Image (cartoon, rainbow, N blue to C red):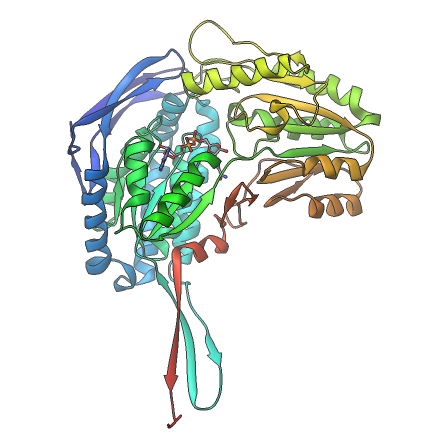
Length: 500
Ligand code: NAD
């Protein structure tokens, strides 16, 4: 099993060969899983098997945890100067950049996202995150704190130890970098579990980790199912922290497991049901484009998807007309075609889940204004869908659909919009569209969300913190704020004359 799989791409946007290792990457080597399990990787374009990769279980997580602990104690952490850790992260970024086309192609194959999108956004975004944290690696520092003349006190920001990283399938490479970037910069070792649905780019990255110079055991990639490998990672007593991105349901389970095991630290980036609030005075052309990007980008498979669109009454009809035309213009199809905007949803399960939400919207009395059906007759394609006549209590307004489905709701006053925008268990992001600067800031401050975009949506920045209020998560990723979740603060008190 610790073998490789080779794929020949012969597409309009990419031609080339990719060879991907399929084993578990533990202690710098590819190994077979103890229980010899495998996972089939499915092509969402047609439902066919692309290849099989190793499926790790608790036994493999234990082996990886021991390797990561040993590496942490013997050859990583503060034993390696920050500048050196930073050089390795920069080298990894260079290697990824040099192979950007191949990685974008693998991501398009595995997730079903448009190659052009993966090439323009996912891969360069990952490179940028690695470089950003490479820059931090030698700038993580504590403070000296004045107390009195007889004492000196200072803080150290020490690495936590072994970090378990569990990531979802919607942005496999980016999510990997959001975890390993700050974790490695701060001097932790990592066991990363990719989503069982999309393991290919993480596996392809392993030889680059070796080439970048990371010592054996510093990063381990253990593919496997959530209920086995993922669960084992949050149970394992050697693991000091779990950094998770995924659904709120799984986040809750991970927190429970962490509490019942060694009370490991947990940071969670969870689901969302983000509102976009559009006032009468907007630049309509730009607003329609941003709101469409907010909900339809990555086929609606974004935790920050602007899936509840509140439109002020005076502009409602015109907005709906233009938004509809925009949705109908989005090209759905082969991820490798030049003009494709939207590929298939990632899996049969997700496809059925989204179609189930569309059915519930119809049953609850919302109107399918556009879309609402499967696209084509094979694979997991869904038409960009717009619901109108939505009520706040409907499932399509309350629950995360994670697909190309927008719910449009008319409002009259600012107060009403803010109240409805906040009527959700989630609090990941929001956007406000208006030319009135006072109102823009007032509304952005009033909506309970970790990110507020004004006159834009779905544009995170590497140096700006990202994370959720309410049930959208705990902790922040990106920017300097993420480092807080990968370090322990130690206070050191030095007696310089206090006699008893
Ligand atoms: P998911 O929760 O099903 O799975 C995420 C990861 O958790 C996978 O690797 C999975 O194998 C693992 N997992 C599943 N059960 C587990 C368990 N019991 N213990 C440990 N690990 C387990 O989520 P998904 O379907 O892969 O991703 C979609 C979700 O992720 C959406 O809810 C979306 O909003 C969220 N998401 C959030 C962010 C963010 O930054 N807030 C970003 C991307 C996606």
